[in-house]
Amino acid sequence: MAKNHITSEDAVTADIEISATPERVFQALTDQKQLVAWWGSEPSVELTTFEMNPNRGGQWRYTCKPRPGHVQGAVEEQMRRGGETQYECHGEVLESIPPRLLVWSWIANWHDRPDQRTVVRWEIEPTKTGTRVRVTHSGLAQLPVARKDYGKGWEGALRLLQTFLQRSGPARS
Image 1: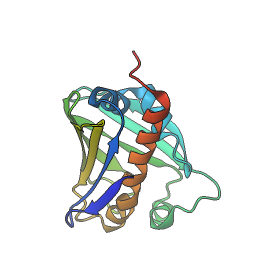
Image 2: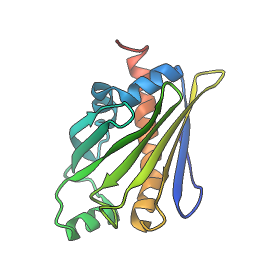
Image 3: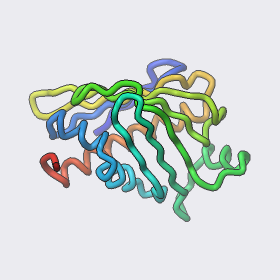
Image 4: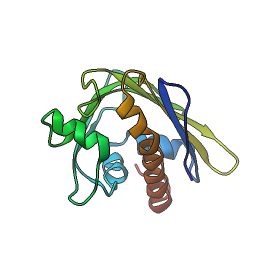
């Protein structure tokens, strides 16, 4: 079960224990095909694109659209006000230290301030039974709607990652 807590007015942190090696987790976070598989399994949206260059300085981007019948809440209202019909998020890989750390910038069209850059930090640590994955999304002090949404959003993303890794097994080449 993913745990979540807002660590400050600026950041949201969630973590989870996954029965997989740190190398396997890192691969699922950086391999474009695997990202499409697990990130795209979110039931409330339809993933249309996920591009990833996991090297430091590399670019990443995803787009998705709301699935009919799924309420998107305040974020959907914000998108409607901005004239957006799909979610788009992109950024740059700021740090990549396999298999322990991945940090990327995050710019999302559904934010209160859509041009504001925030930062997502994935920390991957071995445990006796697998790997603890902690994701911290910072730079949210001026983005109250997004900060509230990410509280549950990152918990959900970690559960999707965990489910994918449990079903897919050992690392793929």
